[in-house]
Amino acid sequence: VHKSCNPQGITISSKSMELVNFLVEDLESRMSDQAFKLAAFQKKSTLSAKHIQTATKLIFPQEMGGMAISEGTKAMTKFFA
Image (cartoon, rainbow, N blue to C red; front, top):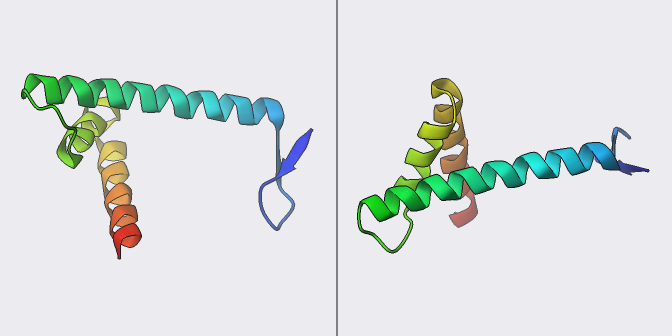
Protein backbone atom coordinates (compact mmCIF):
# COMPACT_ATOMS: atom_id res chain seq x y z
CA VAL A 1 0.00 0.00 0.00
CA HIS A 2 1.37 3.38 -1.01
CA LYS A 3 0.32 6.79 0.20
CA SER A 4 0.67 9.86 -1.97
CA CYS A 5 2.95 12.43 -0.32
CA ASN A 6 2.94 15.25 -2.85
CA PRO A 7 1.45 16.50 -6.13
CA GLN A 8 4.24 14.88 -8.18
CA GLY A 9 2.89 11.45 -7.27
CA ILE A 10 5.91 10.31 -5.24
CA THR A 11 4.78 7.74 -2.69
CA ILE A 12 6.09 5.97 0.41
CA SER A 13 5.23 2.42 1.38
CA SER A 14 3.49 1.74 4.67
CA LYS A 15 6.58 -0.16 5.90
CA SER A 16 8.79 2.83 5.10
CA MET A 17 6.33 5.14 6.84
CA GLU A 18 6.43 2.88 9.92
CA LEU A 19 10.23 3.14 9.96
CA VAL A 20 10.16 6.93 9.64
CA ASN A 21 7.59 7.11 12.44
CA PHE A 22 9.76 4.90 14.65
CA LEU A 23 12.81 7.10 14.02
CA VAL A 24 10.87 10.29 14.86
CA GLU A 25 9.44 8.76 18.05
CA ASP A 26 12.90 7.55 19.12
CA LEU A 27 14.44 10.96 18.51
CA GLU A 28 11.63 12.71 20.40
CA SER A 29 12.12 10.33 23.32
CA ARG A 30 15.88 10.89 23.47
CA MET A 31 15.45 14.67 23.15
CA SER A 32 12.84 14.90 25.90
CA ASP A 33 14.80 12.59 28.22
CA GLN A 34 17.90 14.75 27.83
CA ALA A 35 15.94 18.01 28.25
CA PHE A 36 14.27 16.71 31.43
CA LYS A 37 17.66 15.69 32.83
CA LEU A 38 18.99 19.19 32.14
CA ALA A 39 15.98 20.81 33.82
CA ALA A 40 16.30 18.51 36.85
CA PHE A 41 20.01 19.31 37.10
CA GLN A 42 19.09 23.01 37.29
CA LYS A 43 16.30 22.21 39.79
CA LYS A 44 13.65 23.53 37.37
CA SER A 45 10.17 22.04 37.13
CA THR A 46 9.41 23.47 33.68
CA LEU A 47 11.25 22.87 30.41
CA SER A 48 12.42 25.97 28.59
CA ALA A 49 13.57 26.55 25.02
CA LYS A 50 17.13 26.60 26.37
CA HIS A 51 16.74 23.04 27.69
CA ILE A 52 15.55 21.85 24.27
CA GLN A 53 18.36 23.70 22.49
CA THR A 54 21.00 22.25 24.80
CA ALA A 55 19.56 18.74 24.42
CA THR A 56 19.70 19.23 20.63
CA LYS A 57 23.38 20.20 20.84
CA LEU A 58 24.14 17.15 22.98
CA ILE A 59 22.30 14.62 20.80
CA PHE A 60 23.12 15.78 17.26
CA PRO A 61 26.55 16.21 15.69
CA GLN A 62 27.78 19.82 15.93
CA GLU A 63 26.84 21.14 12.48
CA MET A 64 23.52 19.29 12.37
CA GLY A 65 22.60 20.48 15.87
CA GLY A 66 23.23 24.10 14.93
CA MET A 67 21.09 23.77 11.81
CA ALA A 68 18.31 22.05 13.78
CA ILE A 69 18.24 24.89 16.32
CA SER A 70 18.23 27.48 13.54
CA GLU A 71 15.33 25.79 11.71
CA GLY A 72 13.40 25.36 14.96
CA THR A 73 13.85 29.03 15.81
CA LYS A 74 12.61 30.03 12.33
CA ALA A 75 9.59 27.75 12.69
CA MET A 76 8.69 29.21 16.08
CA THR A 77 9.08 32.78 14.79
CA LYS A 78 6.81 32.01 11.84
CA PHE A 79 4.26 30.21 14.08
CA PHE A 80 3.96 33.12 16.52
CA ALA A 81 4.05 35.86 13.84
